[in-house]
Length: 187
Image 1 (tube, rainbow, N blue to C red):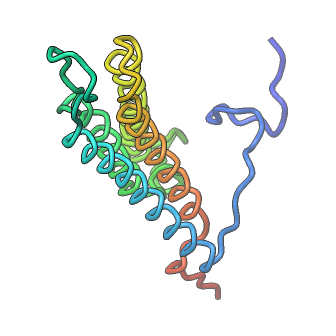
Image 2: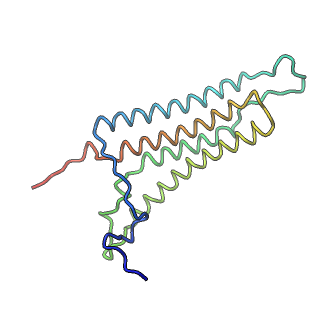
Image 3: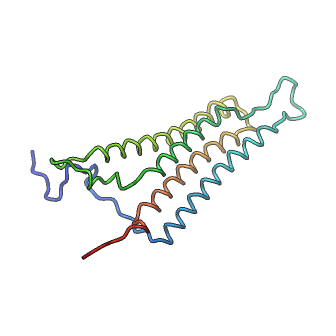
């Protein structure tokens, strides 16, 4: 067994450090507004598809046994999961993830860091599950039965869940820099 390098830290997950984004107060505000705009645009797509779905009628030359496809509760479940995941990740206090203040006597991380990481994992898993669920609904409900005129409903659902994930990433990056309310006191 070889001796680890002097800069090796067994608590790290990756051998290389990821770049840290320096975010100023204007960039932080712009990122927050951009994230909110993406969130609103994502929900607009889903509401637009639901509105079109509620007014869908079969074509005039279709036989009488053709029933138009409407969005149901199954289409809304991925949106609910992604929204809950967005709320969980955006309400998490990011200072608990870096547990410099919560180490025990042996140098291992305290329970605050692990709880924060578990909550972050659950939030990201909810968003990923929402995106996977919307892809499943698109494939099983709109593509396989060959509803060519109704694929927009499933596509809007996938775009909505992808938009919420991108919105969460933009919000996380814009708020991960130095806090504008953080004060540096030196003597």
